[in-house]
Length: 129
Ligand SMILES: [Zn+2]
Image (cartoon, rainbow, N blue to C red; front, side, top):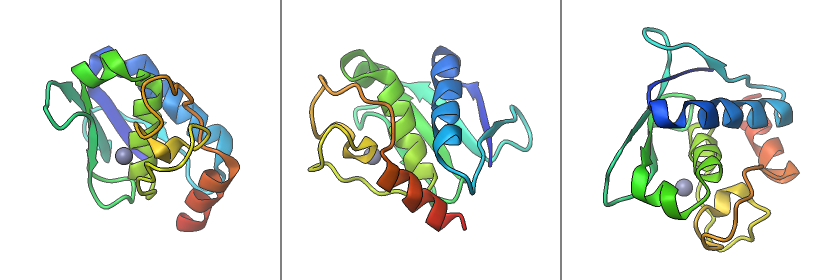
């Protein structure tokens, strides 16, 4: 799965860290940076009252928008890895604990965990089998 982070320069290293986190935990899909033409998943940054979000089908397509204000309050690496989880096909589960990446902002700003747990990782492997 190719991604293009050339339009999110403030988050470049966090996006690459997020890709490394996912690549270390899933076997059936590999995130590879490919800026410009050919990068299927795009990352953007800016200000949006909706906060950060993913738009797409959850199949490595679409785009992730990173909101500056939200990244000042919540752990930016957790936001990037969470939104990337959506691009890999996982839904929000806000009521789950901080140990779950897809609980997102549910556990509050003190939760900085940027890692999917083994259940979330195996869900992605199942989706990409
Ligand atoms: Zn989410």
